[in-house]
Amino acid sequence: MSLFSKLKSGSEALETAKQVQDETHKTQTEIELLKDKVEKLTQICHSLWQIIMENLHLEEAVLEEKVKEIEELDEAPPVQCVSCGRPIHIKKRKCVFCGAGQPDRGFFNTL
Ligand SMILES: [Zn+2]
Image 1 (cartoon, rainbow, N blue to C red):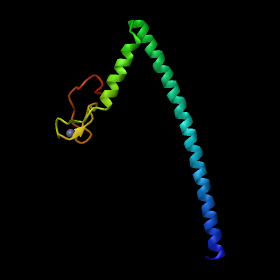
Image 2: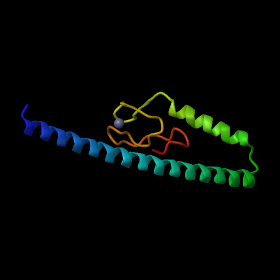
Image 3: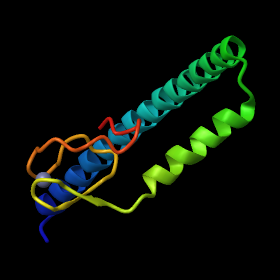
Image 4: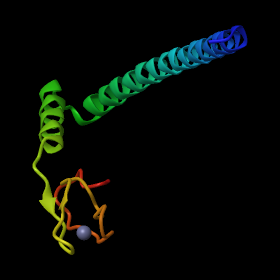
Protein backbone atom coordinates (compact mmCIF):
# COMPACT_ATOMS: atom_id res chain seq x y z
CA MET A 1 0.00 0.00 0.00
CA SER A 2 1.42 3.38 -1.02
CA LEU A 3 1.90 6.19 1.43
CA PHE A 4 -0.90 8.14 -0.29
CA SER A 5 -3.29 5.19 0.05
CA LYS A 6 -2.39 4.80 3.72
CA LEU A 7 -3.01 8.52 4.36
CA LYS A 8 -6.28 8.37 2.47
CA SER A 9 -7.53 5.31 4.35
CA GLY A 10 -6.36 6.89 7.63
CA SER A 11 -8.29 10.10 6.98
CA GLU A 12 -11.36 8.09 5.88
CA ALA A 13 -11.17 6.11 9.11
CA LEU A 14 -10.93 9.35 11.08
CA GLU A 15 -13.94 10.77 9.23
CA THR A 16 -15.93 7.59 9.89
CA ALA A 17 -14.97 7.73 13.58
CA LYS A 18 -16.22 11.35 13.76
CA GLN A 19 -19.50 10.39 12.09
CA VAL A 20 -19.99 7.52 14.54
CA GLN A 21 -19.21 9.88 17.44
CA ASP A 22 -21.78 12.42 16.12
CA GLU A 23 -24.42 9.71 15.68
CA THR A 24 -23.75 8.38 19.17
CA HIS A 25 -24.14 11.87 20.64
CA LYS A 26 -27.40 12.40 18.71
CA THR A 27 -28.73 9.04 19.88
CA GLN A 28 -27.84 9.81 23.51
CA THR A 29 -29.64 13.16 23.23
CA GLU A 30 -32.72 11.48 21.76
CA ILE A 31 -32.72 8.89 24.56
CA GLU A 32 -32.58 11.66 27.18
CA LEU A 33 -35.50 13.47 25.49
CA LEU A 34 -37.50 10.24 25.38
CA LYS A 35 -36.76 9.58 29.07
CA ASP A 36 -38.09 13.07 29.89
CA LYS A 37 -41.21 12.44 27.82
CA VAL A 38 -41.82 9.06 29.48
CA GLU A 39 -41.42 10.68 32.90
CA LYS A 40 -43.90 13.46 32.02
CA LEU A 41 -46.39 10.97 30.58
CA THR A 42 -46.06 8.84 33.71
CA GLN A 43 -46.80 11.89 35.86
CA ILE A 44 -49.81 12.77 33.67
CA CYS A 45 -51.14 9.19 33.87
CA HIS A 46 -50.72 9.21 37.62
CA SER A 47 -52.51 12.57 37.92
CA LEU A 48 -55.36 11.45 35.67
CA TRP A 49 -55.75 8.25 37.65
CA GLN A 50 -55.90 10.24 40.89
CA ILE A 51 -58.64 12.50 39.45
CA ILE A 52 -60.63 9.53 38.15
CA MET A 53 -60.24 7.62 41.43
CA GLU A 54 -61.35 10.59 43.52
CA ASN A 55 -64.29 11.52 41.30
CA LEU A 56 -65.60 8.01 40.70
CA HIS A 57 -64.59 6.64 44.12
CA LEU A 58 -62.58 3.79 42.60
CA GLU A 59 -59.99 1.62 44.29
CA GLU A 60 -56.42 1.02 43.12
CA ALA A 61 -57.40 -2.60 42.36
CA VAL A 62 -59.63 -1.39 39.50
CA LEU A 63 -56.60 0.11 37.75
CA GLU A 64 -54.49 -2.97 38.38
CA GLU A 65 -57.23 -5.19 36.92
CA LYS A 66 -57.52 -2.99 33.81
CA VAL A 67 -53.74 -2.97 33.27
CA LYS A 68 -53.72 -6.76 33.54
CA GLU A 69 -56.61 -6.98 31.04
CA ILE A 70 -54.74 -4.77 28.54
CA GLU A 71 -51.52 -6.76 28.98
CA GLU A 72 -53.43 -9.95 28.25
CA LEU A 73 -54.85 -8.35 25.10
CA ASP A 74 -51.30 -7.55 23.93
CA GLU A 75 -50.39 -11.21 24.34
CA ALA A 76 -53.58 -12.43 22.68
CA PRO A 77 -53.19 -14.78 19.74
CA PRO A 78 -53.99 -13.24 16.35
CA VAL A 79 -57.54 -13.25 15.04
CA GLN A 80 -58.58 -13.70 11.41
CA CYS A 81 -59.54 -10.75 9.26
CA VAL A 82 -63.27 -10.97 8.46
CA SER A 83 -62.55 -10.22 4.80
CA CYS A 84 -59.26 -11.84 3.72
CA GLY A 85 -58.78 -14.31 6.59
CA ARG A 86 -55.19 -13.32 7.29
CA PRO A 87 -54.01 -13.18 10.91
CA ILE A 88 -54.18 -9.73 12.51
CA HIS A 89 -53.83 -8.43 16.05
CA ILE A 90 -57.03 -8.44 18.08
CA LYS A 91 -56.73 -4.67 18.64
CA LYS A 92 -56.72 -3.79 14.94
CA ARG A 93 -59.82 -1.95 13.76
CA LYS A 94 -58.76 -2.35 10.15
CA CYS A 95 -56.93 -5.24 8.51
CA VAL A 96 -53.29 -4.34 7.80
CA PHE A 97 -53.39 -6.49 4.65
CA CYS A 98 -56.67 -5.62 2.94
CA GLY A 99 -57.91 -2.62 4.92
CA ALA A 100 -61.27 -4.18 5.74
CA GLY A 101 -62.99 -2.93 8.88
CA GLN A 102 -63.06 -5.40 11.76
CA PRO A 103 -65.86 -6.05 14.26
CA ASP A 104 -65.59 -4.55 17.73
CA ARG A 105 -63.61 -7.09 19.75
CA GLY A 106 -63.58 -5.04 22.94
CA PHE A 107 -63.16 -1.47 24.06
CA PHE A 108 -59.48 -1.47 23.16
CA ASN A 109 -60.14 -2.27 19.51
CA THR A 110 -58.76 1.12 18.48
CA LEU A 111 -55.67 0.65 16.30
ZN1 LIG B 1 -57.93 -8.53 5.59
